[in-house]
Every structure is written in structure tokens, then in C-alpha cells.
Image (cartoon, rainbow, N blue to C red):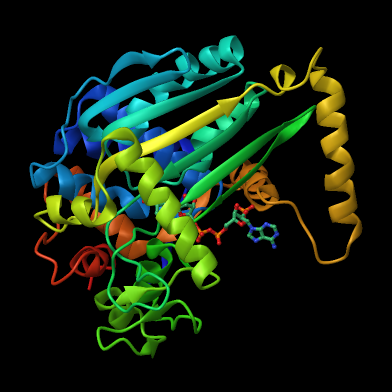
Length: 361
Ligand code: NDP
């Protein structure tokens, strides 16, 4: 790596927003994407921070992402809302759907938000965290592009298919986990390619179907599900929930649609919210949340444990005070975007040319 650049969080947001505007996104999308990117940098989830900007811009310039689509909300059933992103990126559609979903969950006890036709290159924890901040239990599922071989197979078929869960806590930030169905997120492999680092064993196979620890071979081959057949079944479940269930694309179909190989798949996302107080007669939210705390305490009594999301909350406190650092090469790429220049958008396969461009290679 050739050095780093320090930025405050307001600078991250301002930089992201300005260059998204310069590349042609409207105010609402630029703001929503900048919010998502800044939250990822703030929580040190770097594969969804500024690193993702080339993917947003690439899909826009390839004519595959709308710069200005206004998401539309429709009530499909008593407990089901739909937000159609109309081929815009997901952050704006999710912002628009947040409060209507929470209101519906309070009214019905359980409610779902079906997100259609949204390009998604983000993490899922923001949407479920926002539900839990409103006192609700949240679940989110999204498919991606064909990157992962089914257990026993060697060809990419499933997306990395993340799933997220959130639980509200009294007087504390929510408990959230958000994990891919693959052994690693794709962004982690792309970042290791950029930084010249090997992969752990068990993450991927090459095009010849043999295990590899080389990021470039892995990106050309297939990622592996986590935990063998169990992760493979979860990836399968996410495909069905975020695709056929809501009339949207399977990962392999999203891959076919991504003609310019931008690495920004367009498909569906399912978000489910449950109001805990409606799950038991005369529900007492405070008692339910206090009951859950007993489990969290028992987990933390054991040395070596931590709760999912605690790392992010610690990072959040740190970066609010000290800002973040990003690779100089990424900063340079962002500066080019600011001037309306673009990176090479003709990858040999998804992510490769993008990541090399972001790395300044
Ligand atoms: P990680 O393996 O980094 O983390 C998965 C979860 O495990 C996190 O909630 C993390 O919490 C938690 N965790 C990690 N270590 C511990 C520990 N020691 N004890 C308890 N909990 C722990 O995530 P992935 O690589 O699987 O996925 C990364 C991101 O990529 C996700 O945000 C996902 O949404 C996103 N993604 C997006 C895709 C898309 O198409 N939009 C596709 C695939 C992935 P913590 O955050 O606190 O570390």
C-alpha cells in the first residue's frame, strides 16, 4: 500500500456526496448512498464504505442504475408493504420504506417489506439496526450475483446472500448480526487482492475446482458457503426469499442482467419486522428485553466471547472522535471521480478491474 489519508466522518460524507452528484446521481440518491457509505466507514466495515463508490458509479455509467428514480410504496397485503426502487440503488428505497414498515409491524404485530428492483452493494445491518432502534426485532435477506458454488459443486450459482438480525435492548444499542452465507464477503476478497494478501483456506476454489488461497484465482473461480452444506442451505433459502417469493431475480439472473459486469447486482430484498410486545398476551416489552439480557450476560461471562455488533459500536465511538483512514490509492480514485473522470469499466471478470483501478494499479 502506498500510504493512507485521514478523513473526518463529515469529510467522508461530503466527499461521497459531492462525487456522486458530480457523476450524475440526484440529491436524494447521493445523500442516501453517502449516508450508507459513511455509516460503513464509521463502523469500520470498510468493504461497504468509500471502497464501494466505484461500484455505484460504474453501474450508473453503464446505464444499469437509475440516477434519480423515486421509490414507490404499495400495500400488498395487511402485513406486507412493497417498495419498488425502479432500478435505483437500495439506500434510498430503504430509507423510504423504514418508517412505513415499522408502523405496519406495530399495527399488525409482524410485517414485511418487499424491496424490488434495487441495486444492492451495501451491508444489511443498517436497515435491521434502524428497526431495533424503534423497539422491533428485524430480519433482512438479500441475494447478490452468482459467486458461490453450492455444497459439493464447483461452479458459482448462489450469491454471497447475507442475512441480518436485530434485537432491541433497553438503554443500549441493539444487538445485530449481519453475515454472508459464504465463508467471506466478496468485498473482503477484493480488498485482499488490492492489499496483496492471501485468503484463509476454505474460502474459495479456482476455476479448476481446486481450493485456492489466491484472491485473483478465487474471484475467477467460486466462493464457498460457510459451514459446507449448512451455509449452502442458508444461501438457498435467501435465494428463494429475495427472489421467487417476491417476483425478483435469483442471483444467477441478476448476474446475467449485469451486462457491463459492474458488480452491482439488481434484485430483491426481504425485510421482516416483529413487535415483541405483540407476541405474547399482555406483552411486556421491558420484561421481554430484560429476559434477553440474561442470555447476553451468560454469553459474556465466558472468556473469549463478545456480542455481535459490539465491534461496530466500539469503532463508532472511536471514529466519531478520530475519523477514519483510507488508502491513498482509493483517495486518488475518488478525486478523479470528483473531476468527472472515471475508472476503466471493462473488467476481465467482476471486481477485478474495479479493484485495480481503486488501488491505482
Ligand atoms: P463477518 O464474518 O465479518 O461478520 C459476521 C457477523 O459476525 C457480524 O455481525 C459480526 O459482528 C459478527 N462477529 C464477528 N466476530 C464475532 C465474534 N467473535 N463474536 C460474536 N460475533 C462476531 O461478516 P461477513 O464477512 O459474512 O459479511 C460482511 C458484510 O458483507 C455484511 O455486512 C453483509 O451484509 C455484507 N454483504 C453484502 C452483500 C450484498 O450483496 N449486499 C453480499 C454479502 C455480504 P461485528 O460487526 O460486531 O464484527
